[in-house]
Structures are given as structure tokens and as C-alpha cells.
Amino acid sequence: MVNILLRWAEGADEALGLPAYETEQAAGADLRANLPDGPVTLPPAGRALISTGLHMAIPRGFEVQIRPRSGLALKHGLTLPNSPGTIDADYRGVVGVILLNAGTEAFEVTHGMRIAQMVVAPVVQAVFTHAADLDDTARGSGGFGSTGVD
Image (cartoon, rainbow, N blue to C red; front, side, top):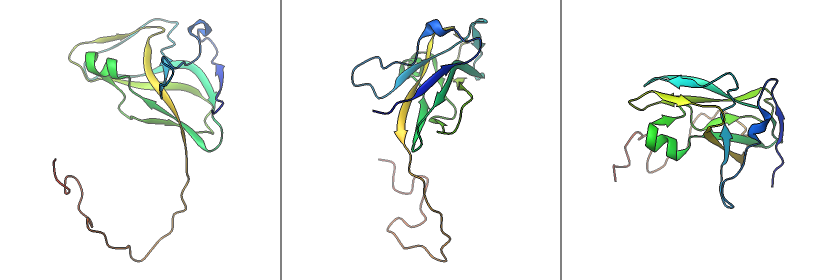
């Protein structure tokens, strides 16, 4: 278990509660739209930054990934254009979720709506070293479909 410390932003509606896992083995905890000033309507192809009303303190060596909710994606075309979004361990601002309406009809994001899920994941930082040559592989420089469509 990893302990994520949370603090409410000024003016946020604390009655919404903290992120929660909806089932015992869920990988993602649901995040809610914290919109005490009223709903946000996303037209088709529209996007907006939706506040969760939360600040987080994530332990060093971890990140929080923000991912779309599958039901909203399937039923309404609502997704996250930067999915998965990353919240770094040293970020302390209010967590916002960029929502994109990829559907064909306007979508209203309402206060308290579950809009995304957060997954806590370990982070490994690399050491980047310049090399004059790289080793050969069977794939080589083939990319973007070079390994076939099936």
C-alpha cells in the first residue's frame, strides 16, 4: 500500500469525499468533478480542464496516472486527450482532468460526476547516456505497423 496525502482546494466541495475504489480489486480509484459553481458543457470536439478540488502529496518513487472511465468513453465519447496523464510526486497544485468530448452530441459535466480514474504506479528514472552506436535487433528501425497488422 502507498499512502497518498490529499488536501481540499480552497472553495472545493468536501462533501464529495476522497477518491475511492469502487470494487475490492479495482486498479483505479474514481475522481469526481468538483464544480460548485455549476456544470460545464462540452460541445462535440470540445475540451475543458475539470477540477477535482484536490491537492495530492505523492511519495517519491511513485506517480498517479489519470485515465478515462470506460463507461463514459463508450456511451458518450468522453476521453482524456493526454491519457494517461501523469501527476508527478513533486506537484502540489490542484489536480485537474482534461476532458475531451469525442462524441457527436454535447455532454454536460456535472458536480460530483465520476470523470476519470487514478492509478498509483511506481516510477523508475533512467540515466541517459549518449552512444555512438546501438546494438542491432531483428526489428531494426521498422516502426508504425512494421511488425504486421494482426
